[in-house]
Image 1: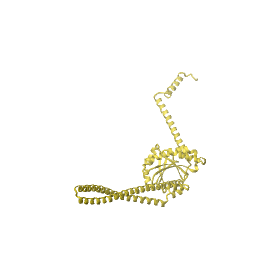
Image 2: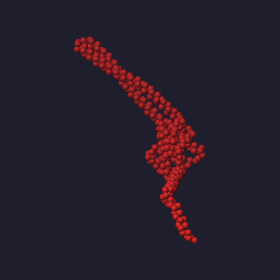
Image 3: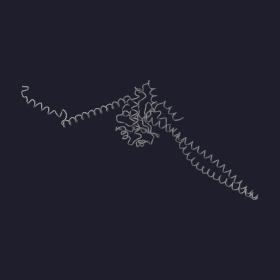
Image 4: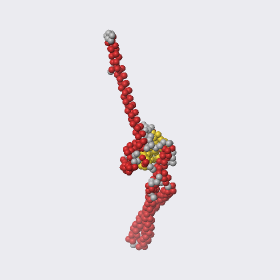
Length: 139
Length: 235
């Protein structure tokens, strides 16, 4: 599985870099029980995208913030905003894994590197926009 | 219990618990076994179906043939009666009666095959629904597990590298600062380009004898000549 994700991501760094206007994009595999590759984008190192793969799909994830960073008094408002925003954000959806809020995009297992690159570029741009737009809900 | 219901229940616990418990190894094995069984029963049902459909076609053909034969012999019996061949007509009627019995049997077989065909088709459909449902449930369970395990690996990796996960605000600030810095640099380099461009233009103009710089030498010379012409000045 690890090998197959690596194969799928062949050339992903170059294609993503080109899509985002000649930025340097680096891939780092993350050790662990499931295949995960970290995608670092020049100038956005704080917001890496993680690509992981299960039996049924490829998932691109961007961690936005932790539950502990959310202003307690505005939490419900934030959650409702995220639900409302979800259908409007192209290619990306909001979600939560444990106590971490994420923006993610899911692709079919047979997606090509170019498809994944497009998802990553959209995810990175959307994550940055979302962070800026929603930072009023954070400490 | 559906897997989504199970995930919802587990979500009330810790993330680690979800990663470990969604895929109940035993339940998954049962599901996977059931999928294999269902696939096997589809294969068997398909092969029986082909067989039963062939037999149904044979019965259909026999019915058509027997109906034809009955009509033929009834015609012959009628002809015998018309020719006052009573005994012969009786004999042909016996033949028709036997054919009718055959026909009855073939019609029953035909009906029984038809109902077997529809039963087998139902069975295949049900097995296919079961497979799709089990595969969906396994996919949900495995995806949940995979996502939580990936998050765990990422957290561990950040922890091991010694770097603290910056808060979202800090990250945003840093990215924005970097972008601003980049924008400032771009602006500065544009300004520099412009200034250098101005200088280049000025020296080109001077070389062509145009502008203030080009005249500077001549003006100085004129001043000196003027002083020479009036040597008493300043004495």
